[in-house]
Image (cartoon, rainbow, N blue to C red; front, side, top):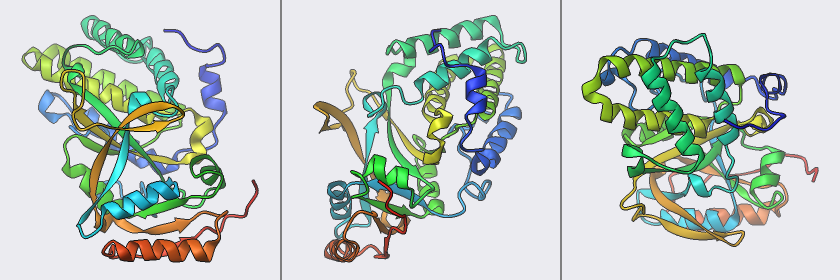
Length: 336
Protein backbone atom coordinates (compact mmCIF):
# COMPACT_ATOMS: atom_id res chain seq x y z
CA UNK A 1 0.00 0.00 0.00
CA UNK A 2 1.24 3.46 -0.81
CA UNK A 3 1.40 6.21 1.80
CA UNK A 4 2.63 9.76 1.88
CA UNK A 5 6.34 9.99 2.67
CA UNK A 6 5.63 12.07 5.77
CA UNK A 7 3.17 9.52 7.14
CA UNK A 8 4.92 7.41 9.75
CA UNK A 9 4.37 5.81 13.13
CA UNK A 10 6.45 8.54 14.74
CA UNK A 11 4.35 11.26 13.12
CA UNK A 12 1.16 9.65 14.37
CA UNK A 13 2.53 9.38 17.90
CA UNK A 14 4.01 12.86 18.19
CA UNK A 15 1.29 15.24 17.08
CA UNK A 16 -1.21 14.55 19.84
CA UNK A 17 -3.57 17.47 20.32
CA UNK A 18 -6.01 15.23 22.17
CA UNK A 19 -5.31 12.30 24.47
CA UNK A 20 -8.67 10.67 23.71
CA UNK A 21 -9.52 10.27 27.39
CA UNK A 22 -13.21 10.62 26.54
CA UNK A 23 -13.11 7.42 24.44
CA UNK A 24 -10.68 5.25 26.41
CA UNK A 25 -13.52 3.62 28.31
CA UNK A 26 -15.43 2.99 25.09
CA UNK A 27 -12.41 1.38 23.38
CA UNK A 28 -11.60 -0.72 26.44
CA UNK A 29 -15.17 -2.00 26.50
CA UNK A 30 -14.94 -2.91 22.81
CA UNK A 31 -11.61 -4.72 23.32
CA UNK A 32 -13.08 -6.64 26.26
CA UNK A 33 -16.17 -7.63 24.25
CA UNK A 34 -14.08 -8.78 21.29
CA UNK A 35 -11.73 -10.83 23.47
CA UNK A 36 -14.69 -12.96 24.58
CA UNK A 37 -15.98 -13.68 21.05
CA UNK A 38 -15.51 -17.29 19.95
CA UNK A 39 -18.18 -17.68 17.28
CA UNK A 40 -20.11 -15.60 14.76
CA UNK A 41 -23.24 -15.17 16.90
CA UNK A 42 -21.21 -13.45 19.62
CA UNK A 43 -19.92 -10.65 17.39
CA UNK A 44 -21.31 -7.23 18.39
CA UNK A 45 -23.61 -6.40 15.47
CA UNK A 46 -23.26 -2.70 16.15
CA UNK A 47 -19.48 -2.84 15.70
CA UNK A 48 -17.77 -0.82 18.48
CA UNK A 49 -20.92 0.71 19.95
CA UNK A 50 -21.87 -0.66 23.39
CA UNK A 51 -24.91 0.42 25.36
CA UNK A 52 -24.81 3.94 26.76
CA UNK A 53 -25.12 2.55 30.28
CA UNK A 54 -21.89 0.57 29.87
CA UNK A 55 -19.86 3.63 28.92
CA UNK A 56 -21.77 6.51 30.48
CA UNK A 57 -18.46 8.33 30.98
CA UNK A 58 -17.95 8.52 27.23
CA UNK A 59 -20.07 11.63 26.85
CA UNK A 60 -20.62 13.51 30.11
CA UNK A 61 -22.24 16.64 28.69
CA UNK A 62 -24.16 17.15 25.46
CA UNK A 63 -23.66 16.54 21.73
CA UNK A 64 -23.70 19.36 19.17
CA UNK A 65 -24.28 19.64 15.44
CA UNK A 66 -22.81 22.78 13.82
CA UNK A 67 -24.79 23.96 10.84
CA UNK A 68 -25.81 26.91 8.68
CA UNK A 69 -28.94 29.05 9.06
CA UNK A 70 -30.51 27.49 5.93
CA UNK A 71 -29.91 23.98 7.20
CA UNK A 72 -31.23 24.86 10.67
CA UNK A 73 -34.48 26.20 9.22
CA UNK A 74 -34.99 23.00 7.20
CA UNK A 75 -34.33 20.85 10.28
CA UNK A 76 -36.73 22.83 12.48
CA UNK A 77 -39.44 22.89 9.80
CA UNK A 78 -39.10 19.13 9.27
CA UNK A 79 -40.41 18.61 12.81
CA UNK A 80 -43.48 20.80 12.41
CA UNK A 81 -46.45 19.12 14.07
CA UNK A 82 -44.69 15.74 14.24
CA UNK A 83 -42.81 13.67 16.83
CA UNK A 84 -39.76 13.40 14.58
CA UNK A 85 -37.43 15.71 12.69
CA UNK A 86 -34.91 14.89 9.95
CA UNK A 87 -31.15 15.21 9.72
CA UNK A 88 -29.19 15.00 6.49
CA UNK A 89 -26.59 12.22 6.27
CA UNK A 90 -24.09 12.50 3.40
CA UNK A 91 -22.84 9.52 1.43
CA UNK A 92 -19.33 8.76 2.58
CA UNK A 93 -17.75 8.72 -0.88
CA UNK A 94 -19.04 12.25 -1.55
CA UNK A 95 -18.01 13.97 1.66
CA UNK A 96 -16.31 17.37 1.48
CA UNK A 97 -12.99 15.74 2.29
CA UNK A 98 -12.82 12.63 0.11
CA UNK A 99 -9.69 11.51 1.98
CA UNK A 100 -11.45 11.65 5.36
CA UNK A 101 -10.06 8.72 7.36
CA UNK A 102 -8.65 7.03 4.26
CA UNK A 103 -4.91 7.59 4.68
CA UNK A 104 -4.98 7.07 8.44
CA UNK A 105 -6.91 3.81 8.23
CA UNK A 106 -4.75 2.40 5.43
CA UNK A 107 -1.59 3.25 7.35
CA UNK A 108 -2.86 1.63 10.56
CA UNK A 109 -4.18 -1.43 8.70
CA UNK A 110 -0.87 -1.88 6.89
CA UNK A 111 1.01 -1.70 10.19
CA UNK A 112 -1.29 -4.26 11.83
CA UNK A 113 -1.43 -6.77 8.97
CA UNK A 114 2.39 -6.91 8.91
CA UNK A 115 2.71 -7.03 12.68
CA UNK A 116 4.21 -10.07 14.36
CA UNK A 117 2.20 -9.33 17.50
CA UNK A 118 -0.96 -10.92 16.08
CA UNK A 119 -1.31 -14.33 14.43
CA UNK A 120 -3.61 -14.51 11.42
CA UNK A 121 -4.39 -17.46 9.19
CA UNK A 122 -2.94 -17.10 5.70
CA UNK A 123 -6.36 -17.43 4.03
CA UNK A 124 -7.90 -14.73 6.19
CA UNK A 125 -4.92 -12.39 5.83
CA UNK A 126 -5.13 -12.64 2.03
CA UNK A 127 -8.89 -12.06 1.98
CA UNK A 128 -8.85 -8.99 4.23
CA UNK A 129 -5.86 -7.53 2.37
CA UNK A 130 -7.70 -7.90 -0.95
CA UNK A 131 -10.83 -6.39 0.62
CA UNK A 132 -9.00 -3.27 1.79
CA UNK A 133 -7.25 -2.96 -1.58
CA UNK A 134 -10.61 -3.06 -3.38
CA UNK A 135 -11.91 -0.31 -1.10
CA UNK A 136 -8.81 1.77 -1.86
CA UNK A 137 -9.63 1.50 -5.55
CA UNK A 138 -13.29 2.38 -5.03
CA UNK A 139 -14.46 -1.12 -5.87
CA UNK A 140 -16.89 -3.38 -4.08
CA UNK A 141 -17.04 -7.12 -4.06
CA UNK A 142 -19.41 -9.88 -3.07
CA UNK A 143 -21.86 -9.00 -0.29
CA UNK A 144 -20.36 -5.57 0.33
CA UNK A 145 -21.71 -4.33 -3.00
CA UNK A 146 -25.20 -4.41 -1.51
CA UNK A 147 -24.58 -1.67 1.06
CA UNK A 148 -23.57 1.97 1.16
CA UNK A 149 -22.86 4.21 4.18
CA UNK A 150 -23.99 7.73 5.10
CA UNK A 151 -22.67 10.02 7.81
CA UNK A 152 -23.43 13.13 9.86
CA UNK A 153 -20.79 14.85 12.00
CA UNK A 154 -21.44 15.91 15.61
CA UNK A 155 -19.12 16.99 18.42
CA UNK A 156 -18.90 17.15 22.20
CA UNK A 157 -17.47 20.72 22.02
CA UNK A 158 -20.41 23.11 21.92
CA UNK A 159 -18.59 26.44 21.62
CA UNK A 160 -15.38 25.97 19.64
CA UNK A 161 -13.89 28.83 17.62
CA UNK A 162 -12.31 26.49 15.02
CA UNK A 163 -15.65 24.71 14.61
CA UNK A 164 -17.58 27.96 14.22
CA UNK A 165 -15.08 29.04 11.60
CA UNK A 166 -14.89 25.76 9.69
CA UNK A 167 -18.50 24.68 9.63
CA UNK A 168 -20.73 27.73 9.85
CA UNK A 169 -19.51 30.39 7.43
CA UNK A 170 -17.01 32.17 9.68
CA UNK A 171 -19.02 32.06 12.88
CA UNK A 172 -22.30 33.06 11.29
CA UNK A 173 -24.10 29.82 11.97
CA UNK A 174 -25.67 27.79 14.75
CA UNK A 175 -25.33 24.48 16.48
CA UNK A 176 -28.11 22.17 17.58
CA UNK A 177 -27.85 20.66 21.05
CA UNK A 178 -28.69 16.95 21.48
CA UNK A 179 -29.16 14.74 24.52
CA UNK A 180 -26.49 12.01 24.25
CA UNK A 181 -28.35 9.31 26.14
CA UNK A 182 -31.53 9.62 24.05
CA UNK A 183 -29.56 9.84 20.79
CA UNK A 184 -27.46 6.83 21.78
CA UNK A 185 -30.52 4.74 22.61
CA UNK A 186 -32.27 5.67 19.37
CA UNK A 187 -29.25 4.76 17.23
CA UNK A 188 -28.98 1.45 19.09
CA UNK A 189 -32.58 0.59 18.16
CA UNK A 190 -31.66 0.51 14.46
CA UNK A 191 -29.48 -2.45 13.53
CA UNK A 192 -27.95 -0.48 10.65
CA UNK A 193 -27.24 2.78 12.45
CA UNK A 194 -24.45 3.61 14.90
CA UNK A 195 -23.20 6.53 16.98
CA UNK A 196 -19.39 6.34 16.89
CA UNK A 197 -16.79 8.57 18.55
CA UNK A 198 -13.86 9.39 16.26
CA UNK A 199 -10.43 8.10 17.31
CA UNK A 200 -7.37 10.32 16.88
CA UNK A 201 -4.92 8.29 18.96
CA UNK A 202 -2.50 5.98 17.12
CA UNK A 203 -2.26 3.39 19.91
CA UNK A 204 -6.05 3.09 20.22
CA UNK A 205 -6.41 2.65 16.45
CA UNK A 206 -3.87 -0.17 16.47
CA UNK A 207 -5.64 -1.91 19.36
CA UNK A 208 -8.99 -1.71 17.56
CA UNK A 209 -7.72 -3.12 14.26
CA UNK A 210 -5.70 -5.84 16.00
CA UNK A 211 -8.79 -6.91 17.94
CA UNK A 212 -10.92 -7.02 14.79
CA UNK A 213 -8.34 -8.97 12.77
CA UNK A 214 -7.61 -11.44 15.56
CA UNK A 215 -11.25 -12.20 16.33
CA UNK A 216 -12.39 -12.49 12.71
CA UNK A 217 -9.42 -14.70 11.80
CA UNK A 218 -10.36 -17.13 14.56
CA UNK A 219 -13.99 -17.37 13.41
CA UNK A 220 -12.89 -17.52 9.76
CA UNK A 221 -11.12 -20.81 10.40
CA UNK A 222 -13.71 -22.35 12.72
CA UNK A 223 -17.07 -21.42 11.19
CA UNK A 224 -16.94 -21.91 7.42
CA UNK A 225 -20.70 -22.43 7.25
CA UNK A 226 -21.23 -18.75 8.11
CA UNK A 227 -18.51 -17.42 5.82
CA UNK A 228 -20.89 -15.32 3.67
CA UNK A 229 -22.39 -13.62 6.71
CA UNK A 230 -18.92 -13.21 8.18
CA UNK A 231 -17.66 -11.44 5.06
CA UNK A 232 -20.54 -8.95 5.17
CA UNK A 233 -20.00 -8.19 8.86
CA UNK A 234 -16.24 -7.89 8.33
CA UNK A 235 -16.91 -5.35 5.56
CA UNK A 236 -18.97 -3.30 8.04
CA UNK A 237 -16.24 -3.43 10.66
CA UNK A 238 -13.62 -2.34 8.12
CA UNK A 239 -15.79 0.49 6.79
CA UNK A 240 -16.72 1.73 10.25
CA UNK A 241 -13.09 1.63 11.35
CA UNK A 242 -12.17 3.65 8.29
CA UNK A 243 -14.84 6.21 9.14
CA UNK A 244 -13.92 6.46 12.82
CA UNK A 245 -10.15 7.04 12.36
CA UNK A 246 -8.89 10.58 11.77
CA UNK A 247 -5.47 12.20 11.81
CA UNK A 248 -4.51 13.64 15.25
CA UNK A 249 -4.32 17.16 13.79
CA UNK A 250 -8.15 17.12 13.66
CA UNK A 251 -8.52 16.12 17.31
CA UNK A 252 -9.78 19.59 18.33
CA UNK A 253 -13.05 18.63 16.60
CA UNK A 254 -13.79 15.95 19.25
CA UNK A 255 -16.12 14.42 16.72
CA UNK A 256 -18.96 11.96 17.21
CA UNK A 257 -20.44 10.48 14.04
CA UNK A 258 -23.87 9.15 13.16
CA UNK A 259 -23.42 6.40 10.59
CA UNK A 260 -26.28 4.78 8.69
CA UNK A 261 -25.97 1.74 6.40
CA UNK A 262 -28.45 1.53 3.54
CA UNK A 263 -29.09 -1.17 0.90
CA UNK A 264 -27.66 -0.51 -2.54
CA UNK A 265 -30.19 -1.56 -5.19
CA UNK A 266 -28.57 -2.16 -8.58
CA UNK A 267 -25.83 0.29 -7.62
CA UNK A 268 -28.30 3.02 -6.58
CA UNK A 269 -29.95 3.76 -3.26
CA UNK A 270 -33.57 4.64 -4.00
CA UNK A 271 -33.77 6.88 -0.91
CA UNK A 272 -31.01 9.22 -2.08
CA UNK A 273 -31.49 12.93 -2.71
CA UNK A 274 -28.95 15.42 -4.06
CA UNK A 275 -27.55 18.75 -2.94
CA UNK A 276 -25.14 20.94 -4.90
CA UNK A 277 -21.88 21.81 -3.12
CA UNK A 278 -18.89 23.39 -4.87
CA UNK A 279 -20.46 22.55 -8.21
CA UNK A 280 -20.83 18.84 -7.40
CA UNK A 281 -24.15 17.04 -6.94
CA UNK A 282 -23.60 15.21 -3.65
CA UNK A 283 -25.97 12.39 -2.62
CA UNK A 284 -27.50 12.26 0.84
CA UNK A 285 -30.41 10.73 2.72
CA UNK A 286 -32.83 12.20 5.26
CA UNK A 287 -33.02 10.25 8.52
CA UNK A 288 -35.72 10.76 11.13
CA UNK A 289 -34.87 11.33 14.80
CA UNK A 290 -37.27 11.79 17.72
CA UNK A 291 -37.75 15.29 19.08
CA UNK A 292 -36.87 14.17 22.59
CA UNK A 293 -33.16 14.17 21.69
CA UNK A 294 -33.39 17.93 20.93
CA UNK A 295 -32.25 20.21 23.78
CA UNK A 296 -31.96 23.57 22.03
CA UNK A 297 -29.82 25.73 19.74
CA UNK A 298 -26.66 27.81 20.18
CA UNK A 299 -26.26 31.05 18.20
CA UNK A 300 -22.83 31.58 16.62
CA UNK A 301 -20.45 34.33 17.83
CA UNK A 302 -20.65 36.59 14.78
CA UNK A 303 -24.41 36.94 14.65
CA UNK A 304 -26.49 39.73 16.13
CA UNK A 305 -27.26 37.65 19.19
CA UNK A 306 -30.63 38.98 20.38
CA UNK A 307 -32.19 39.03 16.91
CA UNK A 308 -30.85 35.56 16.03
CA UNK A 309 -32.07 34.13 19.34
CA UNK A 310 -35.57 35.56 18.93
CA UNK A 311 -35.84 34.30 15.36
CA UNK A 312 -34.89 30.74 16.31
CA UNK A 313 -37.39 30.76 19.16
CA UNK A 314 -40.10 31.96 16.76
CA UNK A 315 -39.28 29.27 14.18
CA UNK A 316 -39.42 26.56 16.85
CA UNK A 317 -42.76 27.86 18.13
CA UNK A 318 -44.16 28.15 14.59
CA UNK A 319 -43.38 24.49 13.99
CA UNK A 320 -45.31 23.08 16.90
CA UNK A 321 -42.74 23.51 19.66
CA UNK A 322 -40.09 20.95 20.46
CA UNK A 323 -40.47 20.39 24.17
CA UNK A 324 -37.32 22.45 24.62
CA UNK A 325 -36.98 25.87 23.01
CA UNK A 326 -33.85 26.88 24.89
CA UNK A 327 -31.64 29.06 22.72
CA UNK A 328 -28.16 29.92 23.97
CA UNK A 329 -25.68 32.48 22.66
CA UNK A 330 -22.05 31.60 22.03
CA UNK A 331 -19.63 32.86 24.69
CA UNK A 332 -16.60 32.34 22.44
CA UNK A 333 -14.44 35.46 21.99
CA UNK A 334 -14.20 36.61 18.37
CA UNK A 335 -10.69 36.07 17.06
CA UNK A 336 -11.22 35.66 13.32
